[in-house]
Image (cartoon, rainbow, N blue to C red):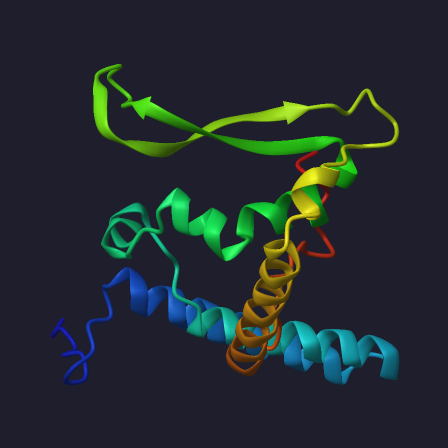
Amino acid sequence: MPTREPPKGKDPGTKKTARKKAVKKTAKKTAKKAARRSPNRRDAAAERARLDRARARTITLRPAVMDELPAMSLERFVELGLLQEINRLFLNPRGLSMTLRLTRRGFDGNLLGHPAVMFDRIVDGREQPEGMVFARVLEEPDAKLKRDRVERMRVEAGRTRAAEYGWSVQPIEIDDDDSGGQ
C-alpha cells in the first residue's frame, strides 16, 4: 500500500501538530453541543469553545523555556512593591506572610562581598483569626507608590492577556463530566 506524503511544511507526527488538532476538534465539538442547548447553556458552551481556541494559542512554559526567560532579582521584586502587595492583598488576610532577609552570607555559608536579599520563609499565622498586619511597613512614604505601581502593572498586563486569551487571570477549567478523580 503506498504511503501518503504529508503536505509541505507540516509533519503530522509532531506532538505540536497533534495537540493543535486535538484542541481544534474539542472546540468544534463544544460549539456543536452549544448549538443544541438552551440560551444560557449556549453562552457557557460558547465561552468554553472560545477558551479552547485561546488554549491553542497559549504558550506552555516548560522548564527548558523557563530557564531562557530573564530572572528578576529579589531586590528588584521588593523595590517594585511586589512583595508588599503579595503579602498585603493575598497572604496576610489568610494569616500568611512571605519574608525575605538581608544577609552577608551566600547559600554555601561563605561571606559575600556585599549584602544580599534572600528568601527566608513563609510565616504561618493562620491560628490568629485576625490575620497579619504590618503597620510600620505600610506607613513608609513609598508604600503608596509601590501599591500604585503594582496596580498599574496588573491593569496593563490584564489588558494584554484579555486581548490575547479572553481573560486576565487564567481560569481553572474542570470538565462537566470530571468526577474529581473518583
